[in-house]
Each structure stands twice: as structure tokens, then as C-alpha cells.
Image (cartoon, rainbow, N blue to C red; front, side, top):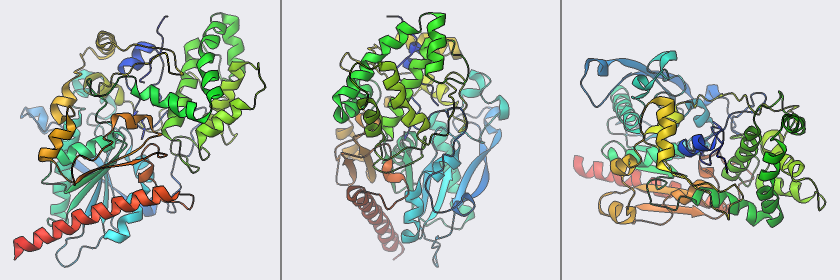
Length: 511
């Protein structure tokens, strides 16, 4: 079969923009951003269901950050403005400025979007008297080292790495504590999806700066040969199969029908009408990408309450997708059925008159993920015959070819595990690490690449059967099920323990 789109076009969180399935080789080499897709025909309001406006959620600041933390070439000392957000409403500095500082380690996009969807930190700030800081990842949002030329070529993009980003966070946090006379304040880092990976890695790399990390929906094991390469798409398929076997079979059987019908100009025109495309679609693979994306992202955010993290969606959106398929009478056109399902994701509110199937926008500034997935964030993904998606085998050679063609560089598939570990993680982290919460919901397909078992008494895995992509980090709502409230209470208790121990150690030292 000719490969025109690829299964791994996230990190949700997420990852998740829709660099989905534009061509099979591309997707294969460019994993799904861990958080968010591109919007459909017009921009949607993607703010969380917060009780506050942005003006009360945070204030905006910029920090003069060095370009390169690891060499001493003249260019290394060039500065760029790194954006960060703060909320000091509840910061209990105390007589010795000891109030805790909670830091969000920014993902692959503009930092406001992540702050607006990480309500857990705002919800618990009053209890802890915490200062909240959300730091934007270099090369995303407004934190562009070379301005509009930041994505120009590999020479500029070469400074976009996770290690540089972690060093950015460390330097900014140290400077902030000094400027606020808060040297004694304990720091806890938080993150979801790719941000969750960074939070865990930050705790491992900079334990003298952060006393602990909450790493939510972080697929830190989605590298090398640590987990089966088919895990992500096996999980998406299982989510749909668990809801309805008929739904699973209809989706599985729809791909060939779409490709066959779109193999002629007349068929493409008819499909464009059927899919309600805003413009005539030029490639049949674009229809497949559009559907493909709706399934993967809906699986990620299959929340038990209405939410608009990626798109405005109802509670249990997979259930609603499958309900729309299952109400069709036997023998109905599969293409009509899957379009009805995809409309749950793209048009649940009913305000979209047509869809930009081939001309998507990037409202959250996520373009740098292409580079990251072509360099160090190499997450191999395959698709088996048992999946509801067309079978696909990932190869490193295809990855090299795609990335070399795009950027003139060669991926380093073993760098993440060399730099941060991951192989035999239970044995390794037990010996030297502490104070990390790995939270995962098993409805989230990225959970298969996460830490799902306790490693030690202080490296805790909180796993919920019905949880989805970093659901625990969202604002609390009245629709929250008891198990979610319980999970968050566990996280609060663990973080409280870290902070109590820190203050006790501080007291012991001072006395």
C-alpha cells in the first residue's frame, strides 16, 4: 500500500498541531504534538472553564535569557526575551519569604494556553500560599530567539532542544528567587504531556532547584525499544472498541472506501461536498488525515465532563462519536457514518458551516515541534492489523529521509534515553531519584508510554482507569467524578509532604 500519511503526526496533553497524517512518512517521523491540534474553519475559544479572566489569572513578564547555555562561543551570550506568567495573589511570603513557588514547565506552544488549562495550580495556590509561575518554552509563543527568523533554518533551530529549555527554566527560577528575596522558598514543578516530561526531567537534572515534580500524562518511556511501538494506536483503538464494537468496525472499514472513492477527480469533488470542505480538496489523503486526527485527539481528551481544551466537546466524547455511528441503520454508507462521528470533534457546537480540511491554522504557535521530533523527540510508532487504523511499519531509514529532506539533519533516536534515562527505569530511579508524581489516565493513549507503577516510596504512580490526557491538571468542576477528586487530593497530600519536609530540613539546618 502506498504510504501517504503517517501514524505519529502530541505530548496531549497533546499532544497532540495537527501535523497528523499529511503523509505517512511525515507522520511517522513527526510524532503527534503532545497537546493540541490546529483549529478547523475558524478559530475557536480554547480557554478552559476557569472562573477568572486572564487579567486575574496572571501577569505577563519577560526575562533576558541567553541563547546557548552549553558553549562559550560569542553567539552563545546573545539574549532573547523569554516570556513567563505570574500569579502572586496567594503567595504567603512570610517573615522569611519562605512561601512555596509552583512552576509550570512550558510545552510546545504559547504559555497562556497552558496556563489557562492548568487550573489545578490555581485551585491549590490558596491552600499552599504559593506563587505561580508559568514559563514559556524557547522557540514557542513569543519566546523566539531570532524573532520571525527563528524557524528559518537548522542553524537557528539548532538551539531548540529540551536540554536548553530545562536550563532556561533553571536560570529563570534562580533569578526570580533572588529578585524576590525568596531564596528559601521551595520550588515544585508541574507539567502535562511534553511539559510533564520536562517537569520529571527537571527534577532529575536540577534537584537542587526543585524539591519535587508533578508529571502528568508524560510519555517518558515512548522512546527506543522501551514499550511496544504499536502502543499508542492500540490504545486509541481499544478506547473505541470498549465503547462499541460496531463503531470500531465501521471506522476500520472506512479507510479503503474513502481512498477508493477519492482516487478520481470526480470522487474527490464528491467527497469535498460530503465532508463539507470549505474549498475543493486536492488530495484524498487529506480526508483521511482529518478523520484520523479527530479519533486520536478525542481519545486523548475523553474527559468525563464537558471541556474545550482542544475543541468544545461533550462529556465522554468517544461515547458520543460511537452513538452517532451506531444510530445509522445497517448497510448505511460508512463514509457518512464516520463524518457524523468526526463532527463531534470538529463541530459539536454546530457553528461550523464548512471545514478547512487542507488549510489549517496554528493558533497556538506549535510549529517548532516538527524540528524537535526530527532531532531528539523520536517516538517510533507502528500500527498493527488489530488496530482500527491502516497498518503501518515505522523505520528509522524513513525517519532519516524525511528529516533530512525537511531540515538537512539526521535524527538522534537514542539521545533522550541517553540524556534522561528510561531503560530499566524502575531499577535506576529507585537508586537515586525522589519526589516525583507520575499521573496517568488509561483512556489517554499516551499513558502507555508513561510510568504506571510506583518506583519507590517517593516516586509515585497515580493511575486512573477512566482518566484522560492530564485531566488532573484542569480546573476542578462540579461535574468531577469522585475518583478524580480523590486523585487530586492524593497529589495535594504528597506535595504537602514534600514542602513540610523541606521546611523541617530548613529548620534543622538553621538550628
